[in-house]
Image (cartoon, rainbow, N blue to C red; front, top):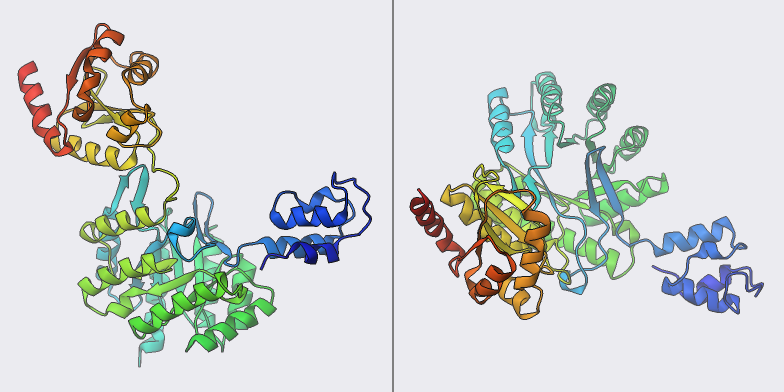
Amino acid sequence: MALKGIDIFKLSPKKNCRECGCPTCLSFCMKVAQGAVHPDRCPYFTKEAKAKIAESSEPAMRTITAGDGDTTYALGGETVLFRHEKAFVSPTRYAVCLSSAMSPEEADRKLEEMRRVDYVRIGERMFVEMVEIEDSTACAGDGHTNLQERYAELIQKAAKLKDRVLILTTHNTDLASKAVDYLLSTGNRNFILNGADFNNYAEMNALAVQAHIPLGVFGGNNDELYDTIALLEKLGNRNLLFNAPDTDVQSAFSTTVQFRRAAIKDGNRTCGYPSIVHVNKLAGADAHLEAALLSLFTVKYGSILIADRMTYALANPLYGLRQNIFSDPQKPMRVEPGIYPINGADENSILLTTTDFALTCFLVEGELERSGVPCNLVITDAGGYSVLTSWAAGKLSASSIASFVKENVEPKVKCRTLCIPGKVAVLKKDLEKKLPGWKIFTAPREAIQLGKFLKDMQRENN
């Protein structure tokens, strides 16, 4: 937990030299505790004292980075239990499981199905960010060698997906060593080693530390999981994740909640690591239960959720939920103002305008795409508010629209037909005065009516 002012004062030089700009060391330390000044402003603090202050000021839940280069995802780093208290900062990431017990054909089908889920929603790419490669040799009676060969083949196949992080799940240290060596030899650091437990933690730790990658930890129960994490911390490794139990939903849910509460409310840093939840195992073969559990653990503290498969039918509501949960409730979701071509629109296509409120843009864009009519969507800066709210607040007006059009639209397009939202039809006359040479039309009040509106306009123009 963060040190109090008096605790920082005990670490201070107690010179009262005023070189920091404060009259006394105590007043300086109080400001440091409040976050108003940085300890570096005092030239006499020892390195040890600064390190202790810095460590105490870090979030109780550590931020773990998975991946490398452009394929990098932050996990954890949360400071609150509930979104309305502040905001959640590191979105849940989804993975599809490939097991060495699968046939090559089944693995190929899963990878192809996963690759098809790739679209943009409100400026954010929605796709499966991770792939788990699970070692099934521990569950096999015979044929270990064949399964290990399949495991290696799956890693080679999945490693070709350059924009995905691999999760190497195995408790076999020899197999883990070979997998890590192979990936490092190809220059690939986009992976997590997942398989440390009470029996092999030292060997797994050595592999993860040498490769500079996160290490996933397992435990037979919460006590064993906690103790194993503590042992890894004693070895100096704090680049960790923990695996929630995969035996039943209640145990998994209890673990993710208890560890988050212990970290944030009690300041127990040993519990303050991101979680991996094997939703595929909790759900068994029930696809509907898996969808429900993916939603549950997106809300309740799953950092990485591993699914059996990912389809568009599952992804659309799931990624929408994630985007809503991991947004700052104190800041409106905004889309960058500009011109967005839809359905292959060019400089001669009709223009429609709306505000930069993300939900409004998403709904309007979807209806425009479904119409099939080429058009340009003009997003104006309205403070991130909806149409009526921005108009009432003075953020959306004839002057603001005309100014944006003159500066950002006229130089780029030849078309001079602009449709404004039906809910602000009152702006039409003022806009016609402020934009001479433009034809101003009023679009329907509801987005769902835009398709018919555009098709009718297209027929009239033809």
